[in-house]
Image 1: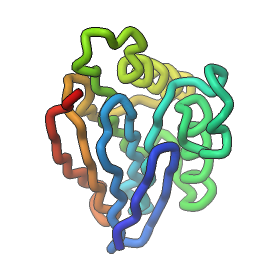
Image 2 (image 1 turned 180 degrees about the vertical axis):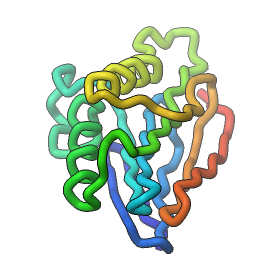
Image 3 (image 1 turned 90 degrees about the horizontal axis):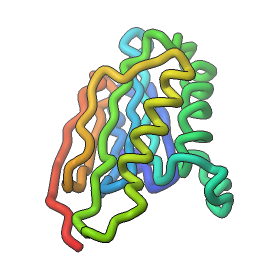
Length: 156
């Protein structure tokens, strides 16, 4: 079954028939986590780096990297008895705007925040498909942890 992860959301599964999907990652970043022994997967669609910037989306557990990544790690550990150091972590998205007036650089800031949080948690990612001016849609098979990426150039 397809499980759709919207902006600021995350989901987990250990059902082998499930596929975790998220759409149109531009400056947003999807972090995937896969535990090969438990055959369990998690995905989060992060919009902003830090909840201290704005508290309007606190109700969405994955909206901010600062809140979402620790929460997803905690849930993967609790629900599937995953050991953090055995997780295969991958990053997707974090694109730059094609606008020359993009002074916020949210994609880059998201990636920097995620890298810092993973480092603080004693983790590192094994693969990344990030940056550039591409929108990415990804689908992760829970049975294998394989992520398929569809890209499209950003237009503004």
